Image (cartoon, rainbow, N blue to C red; front, side):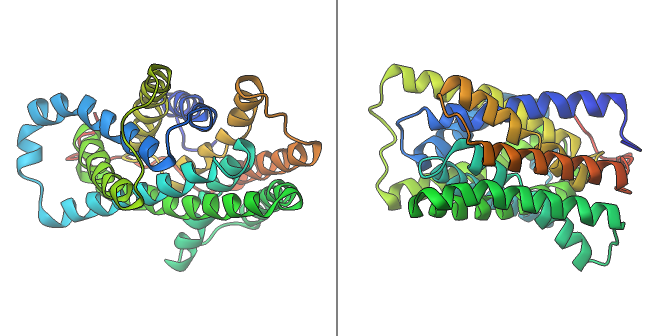
Length: 301
């Protein structure tokens, strides 16, 4: 991938492996979807609090209103992303939900096109291949049940919200450290999801110890090691590259779901996953995206 260094590739790989655990782990939980989404963000916020409050106290106390508004908007988009996607995992398969939510790259590129950026023919062909692959996967679910179709639609909304989270976060990260940004973003997301749990009447307590263990595991892997790594990279790597890397979550989650949950995807769904990967590979090869140099004043730790 032109313009992307070895360090970035390693971090992208770590992030992809970490977020691939998210779907299978959450699908194995009996907690309500909004409660899962709330707790993974709330626990991550608590884990980040010492670093943000102590090590980044000056930065936190001097956040301009405009920059704070950007991070809050990013947290709101993340809350919508989690609320719709985690709910979709209860209605459709992990492979389909993950494929559709990972389609956020299409929304990212569409936004860039609206802003006047132009991509080569190979990039557009790759995106079409990915779209076809996603339709194949979701079409398998549609043939099985209307319930799965609802799950697919929710996952698609989650993908759009995920794109907004990446795009807004990319702007905010140019002048904020990873610690400060993720703390405020996850904290905002937690508050929105807490309110959603109250309105929806979803219980936050009273679950078996094994469920809390799974929740801590998904927080440590997908949230702190996955999302936070991608947030770190947004200071130096384009939103398109980050979103492309997230497409690799599709086969990763499908393989983990097959092993962890016994969800063996049909052959048609596997064909769709192959198309998604082929489209992603073509975009990577043809994309003009390059690794951006972070502004000198922007801390990236």
